[in-house]
Image (cartoon, rainbow, N blue to C red; front, top):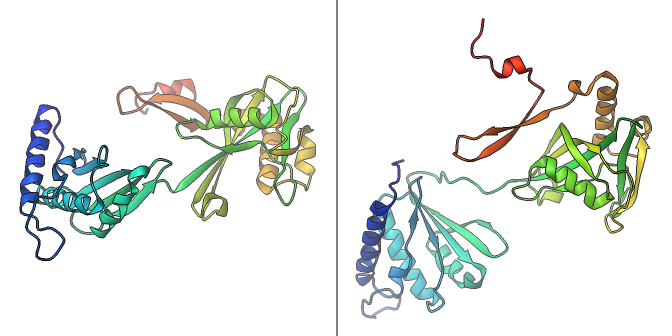
Length: 313
């Protein structure tokens, strides 16, 4: 794909594109048979923002005066122009209060890509061959906190109120957009149990597909080791039936627990006896390739001399 230009150069391109849309509209016949060829109303009101992948993003703003038929003519003229310019795709963002424009767009070949609380996004592939547009989110991320007090060998467990079988498990929930998994674990533990804690390590990752609770999508479930710094339980009555500090050995032996909780309890027991370095995936924040951004990398602890090594002997 050709790299996209920026700044005043693109403003000139957009201006030419808008003029071209108007010219194309003047040649476009209206929908009714036998009607005169009038310019499509609002054709100049569909400016597209060009992206670096060769696509066009259209955001509908003040189009309340357009009816669906006029919008369809304007969009059809704009798509024709973008296709002639070699654009590969169109992203059409429609606010929920302008949903009347979805059907006209669909009649031109647009398909749903995703929807959020206040808008939907439709796409139209203009390039050659099958669409190469990326799909929307296909996974949900759940996080639990295994809050373990090394001094007492007690671990914090809960029973969910709204389950058919009330088995012991670690408190947790879904991660929010833009929230790190360690922060999710700390937040969810506090919301469910009233216990304050801090992130120590990542213990395990479960991957599961076609999860009914994830609307049939794939599900990622992370369990973090947390260290408590408060101990008085004040659990959420709406979410939890029971909550208590349980001896780790008792959690390992009980049958009234979920399989993943049982396995992680054994993992924690191994770490407690042999050293948590045997089980911990630690976290380090590193600079991303994008200026000013960072990411968090989870892995077994790397010795300091290997962090700075520049070559192999």
